[in-house]
Length: 169
Length: 256
Image (tube, rainbow over all chains, first blue to last red; front, side, top):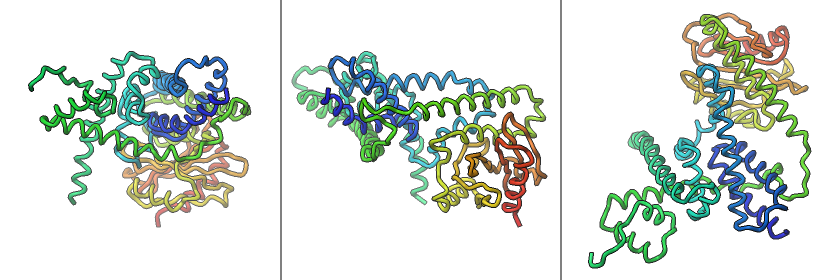
């Protein structure tokens, strides 16, 4: 199994990059990667050398990410009145106040579109691999990708009007 | 035009951008795009977006791998950090539950009056147990912290020095408020007790107020409005103890 171990470690930087794109937040991203690796090491013995190790790692991360998105949605905090929670809840994204439009636009995509855009565009996975990682049919990958690109464009174009105005001054 | 070709689909355009077309088909798409400037512009924009995303995320690859990410099957992690994390989440949930219930049962008037204290208390329980990243900008970069928060709040703002009261600045963060950003400074004492100062411009136009005290679940809060800002000082300590610190904060921040 030594080869597999080295391959797993070799995937950590790109897992971190993917997680950073998904969460937009360094700590949350590394939490995901930490949990992914912990799970991977305990399951490595059971992994039967079936297929793509990299896709396997990304699929573990995907499952953990989906769990977190779901957990956040049914968090008891959400049942509190909106104005009471406005500050702390959105503050998890407060890092965004200072970052570039692109990062912000990316986080405005629904999580499942963000996943596809990052796996295909940044991790440069094939549509087939992406479908395997996410456990969806290739057709779903295509439709999410198409929506992701359209939406990202719309968000960026909406904002770029402002920055262009600034540039003119 | 001369031969019958498979029509170009939206899927082909994406696959073209993502380099996932076989060479003959890629050439067909290229030729097709050459005669359609609008489609070409669309595809080029997608390409630019992807390049920009890659560029934005590329620095992550060069970062050292944090120690907490296990790089072998043999390294055993202590259960303590996890336990501490779970415990602080449990405390946090309990505190939020308490605060939430208060918010639901309070009379509307009391709610408005205490809204500053209440928000500050929630921000306190959310961030003060955060072991890993309680602040966005640390005290070691105080100058940047001051410049950043002053800029975002639109008025000069400086964290008070509370060394005399036994509290050192850890750093600060920016939180979104109802009508604009809110600053939170965090301090701790030698025993690790954390204290936060919440600074907002909301409601400050209503005029100065005296010190007021609110007990928000486990959190004691002193709050007041002075000049351009509303302040709320929160900690899980006794009222009398917090009062001493609040006086010191007030003394240092009072506009002359």
